[in-house]
Structure formats: C-alpha cells, structure tokens
Length: 280
Image (cartoon, rainbow, N blue to C red; front, side, top):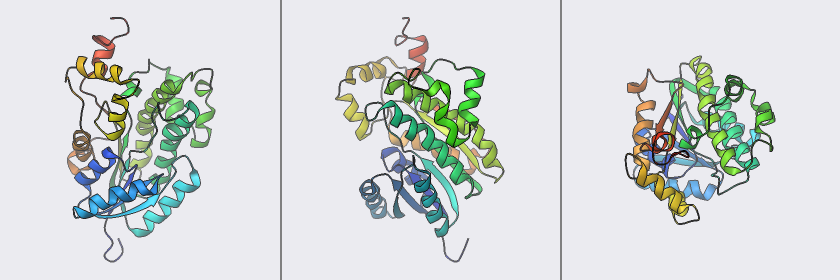
C-alpha cells in the first residue's frame, strides 16, 4: 500500500444491508459506497461519516461493463481493495424479467470478474443473494454448471434464460439468485488464486425500507404469512445479515469460501416441508 492509504472496503448498493455490513467491517478503513443513484450513496455516506467512518462515494451501473470497470479503476487507484460487498439489485416488483436478469444475474457475474483482478491477498467478498434462489426447483447438473461458469458476456444467451422459460419477474429473480450462489461457488476458485475468499448470503425477509413497502403492497399478506408460519416467527434485521457477513470477511471465517448462507428464519423450511408448502 502506498503512503498513508488505507485498506478499502467497496460496498456496491448503498441500502440498509450494505450499510449495516459496512459498519461492522469498515472502521479504520476507507469505505467506498457505490450506487446507481449517487444521491443514495451520498445520503448513506453522510450517516457513516457522522459516525466516524472514512467514506466516499461513486456511481456505478453493475449491468454496464464500462461502468463497473471505471469503478474498479477508481477504487484500486485509492488503495488496496480488502473487501467487496455486493448488495445491489432489483426486486420482482421493481423491474421486468429482462432487467432483473441483466442486473441481478449478469451484473453480479460482471462485478465478480472485474474485482477478481484487484482484490488483495487475504481479501474477501460477500454477495447478497436471496432466499428466493432456494425456492427454485432443482436444476440439472448442466444448468448449474452453465450458471456458474458460462463466460459473462454469454450468460444471458443461455437457452433456459429465454422468455419461454422465464415467464415473469418472480421466476427471473429466482433464477438470478440461484445463479448468484452458483457463480460465487465457481468464482471462489479464481479468487483463491489471489489468496482471497468469496461467499454468498441469501437473506429472507429483512426489514428495510423496500421490505416495508412490500409489506404494505399487494403481496403484503403473502409476506406476513411467510413470517408467521416460519420457525422464527419474525422478520430479520440488516444487522443480523451483517453479523454473518462480518464472520465471513474476518480471519475467523478464513476456512469459509465458495459457500452460500441462508438467513431466512426458516421460511424455506416452511415452504418445502411445512405450512407454506404448495402441497400442504
């Protein structure tokens, strides 16, 4: 590291979960908050700065190779990239199937490829996926491998990701989030060549501004039923996701890489084997 430059933690997606993880792992480091909407990043940065964190902001569109590479160039110029937190994405209620695949699936693969070249030795990354990836029925071995290893620019051309299979935004989201965990499993092998680790967290219903909006919207009753019939009987908080991320990004998690951690209060258990099951 040059001069007085600090280690850098890059947070892509300046929402509640990204901010919570940054607070757990970013003190004494330079946190760079990047978001499609710069005003979102700047609002989050002010909160962190007021709490004593060194923070700056950048704009990034993770569905654009040019934009992602520009971010990589800027952050690597400022110091050694010790950590990557990828918490950006769009939900089924926010976008079309095409847009979800472009941002959540292609965008994630693109970011992991780009930051693989600059992540530091002993560095680590965490990708925020979703419990929705665990709702998708089992794929074939060939489909799993395709989602995990297809070159980034060919990913959206996979036959099973075309409109005849991806019927709606919910299905696109499930494929994208399953693809995230599979991609991380394969990409972890490449990150290991730099001495770095990479994992996925798949949160369930976490109380954030977006979740509150969903709970008061057309699907509110569905989400409330998920919560009430889950073993935990409640929603989660961003800090609970951050607790796991902090472990994964610390020396205590040094034996963990290429893994996916489902944090959903047991909602998926209830979906597959309990009162939420389609067959119950």
